[in-house]
Length: 252
Ligand SMILES: [Zn+2]
Figure 1 (cartoon, helix red, strand yellow):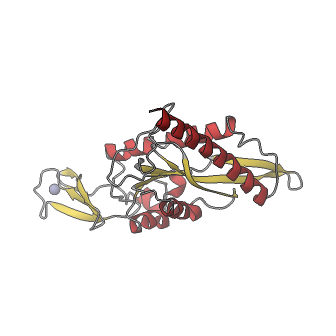
Figure 2: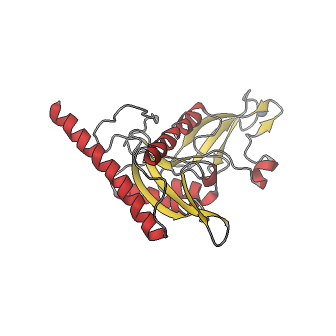
Figure 3: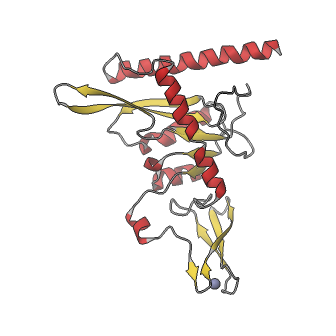
């Protein structure tokens, strides 16, 4: 599941476990995209084939409220990446200003990274072991003075700045173009780690949908029916939350 961040100004993602969010629709700052596996692998056994296949819910979840803002159901064999940018676009069309897209390793690829950058969104994903990573291409530059350190990011330039630890090199700093190996919020920064931790909100939301809202077990077959079941489940949850928020607002 992907969480979309919607605040006009950047705020660190906070997860809300157990507490109710403010009603403001524009209140959230980070969007999280459906993680693979951890989201809802709605699998069922295919009797004839004798092996597992199933459906997966991909969702963009608001990092502040924990609520799904866009979702889709696909068969499990389809790659996560294919839907992630579509979910982000759907969330944006619904009025959420997405600032960060926090997603699991399955989304760590160039199309997702570049698609986020094109939309002015910071992608946050763990590093996937690819040949480039095995080669160490993601590591900071080193010189005789040691490993270069992160010295800031420039969104307009779409690059991060790195500095020689002693400043003795000429030039003492260099810009590195942002790509999935070198994201604008570098993975080694506390900010990146903190944002990624907020992805736990998605897992909790899916847990609630499964156990409290009967997303599982599936009692229907066929993609269209499964989609309808998921839509109705999530919409019921959102409708209940809306009613609750309105009641709280009235009481205040
Ligand atoms: Zn140096």
